[in-house]
Image 1: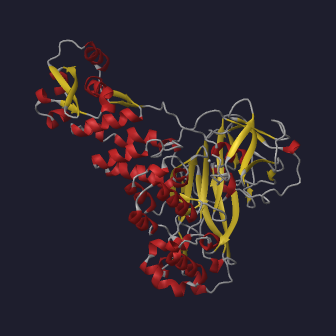
Image 2: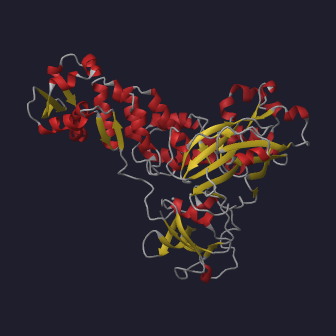
Image 3: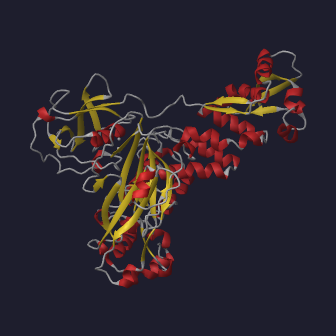
Length: 561
C-alpha cells in the first residue's frame, strides 16, 4: 500500500407496492429522485435530517443499483406529497433493507417537504449479463488450427449433433487433431462414432466445443458454460470438467437476482461434482438473505432449499428472516409434508423473543415453546436439550444489532486523508470499534453485557502500535475488552464464542467468511487478497464485519480462548 492511497472507513450497506418498498420520484431517470417509502398503503418521504451516504447506499442497493453517485437533501427533486414517514434515519451499514435501519418511528418528525431527501444512484445494473470467462490451454499452433477448423475443409470426420436422438447437424472435424488430445483418446477410443447429445438450447454451442480441441481456447457466458461442461462430461473430458469451479464461479458472484441458480445446481448434481456443489451452496448460504429477497427464491427446488437451510454458515439478519423466507417459498410450492421437514431446519430458539411471540399458527406451538424455554431458563436446565439437539441451539451468522460491527475499507488512488464515520451508536475511532453485546443471545442474559474491541489493521505501523505481528494486510481482530462480572463463574465458563469475520464486496455480496476465535487476544485473522478468494472481488470497496456468535458449551473445558 502506497502513501498516496486513501483509506476510507465508512459504513455501508439494502427490495414492489409492498410494505417498506422504495421508489425514486421526479428524477431525470429511474436512477435518481426524491426517496419515497411505501408504508401503511401509501407513499411518503424521508426527511433529510441525518440523511447521509450510509442511508443512501441502503436505498440504492435495495433498488438494485451498483452504488451512490450523490446524496441530496433540501428537496432537490422538488417537494413530495403525503406524509413525511421517516426522520432521523440511522443506517449502520449491515442492513439489506431500509426498514432495518433505526429511526424515531413512522410519521414522527419535525420536518417540512422542503427537507425531503433525495439520491442519485449509479445507473448500472448490479447484474452483468454479458460477463464471460476465457479458458486458455493455448498451444503454439492455436491460431492456425483455429483457422483450419473454421475453414470446414479437408475433413475426415463428421461429428453428429443430436437432440432427442434426432441428428440436427454434423460438424466437420479432423481425426489427427482430435487424436492429439490424450484425454479424448482414452475416453473415446473410436473417433469414427463420435456424437454430441444436447438439449435444444445447447445446439449452438456444439461447434465451439469441438473448436476447443483445435485452439485449446474457449470463451463462455453462463448459458454456454453449462452446455460446454455437459458436453465435456458426456465425453469424459476431465481437463474441462476440472475447470468447472473456475468457469462457473465468475457467474455466481455479484448476481443480485440469482438468475441461474437452478441450472448451475442441476449441472453440479448431474455431473457429481461435489466441489462445485459445495462452492455454489456455500455462496448461497453466505448470501442467504439476498437470495431470500430475490425473484429466484420461490423457484428453487426442494433439495436445494434443504441443502442451504441445513447449514450453520448462513449469513442473515436473524433467524426470523429464514422462517419468513421459508413461508414465502411454501406459498409458491405444493409440498405439504416436505415443508414440515424444512421447518425442522429453522432454529426456533434463535428467533428473537418478540418475533417468537408473534407466531400464532398452531404448527409453531411446540417450536415456540422450545424457543421460550431457551430464552427463559438457565443453561443448567437446558443441558440435556442442548446436548441432544445441539444444532438447533447453535447460532448461524446473525448480523443484526448488537451482534456485529462493520468497517468499510475503500482504497482510492487519490492523496487524501482517512475519512472516519460512526457505526450507529458504536464508537469507531481510527481503525477500532468498541461495542457491547449480551454475554449470550438468550433473553435470560439480556442485562449481562460483555464489551468487545474490533480492530482493522491496514498498515505495518498500525500493527506495531498495537504490538501485534501482522504477516499481511488487511488483518482483523476481535477480542473481549471487558468481561461481565455479574454472573456466576460457573455460568460464565459454560459460555463460549465462535465468532466470524464476514467480508463483502461492494456492499453487495459476501465473498469470504473466516473464524475469529481468539477472543482473549488481539491475534488477527489475515485476509487473503480479494482477487485470490474463491469468490473474487474486482472492486476496491470491501467491508469487514465482525460477528459475535455465543454458544453453550456442553464441555466447559472446550471454551474458546
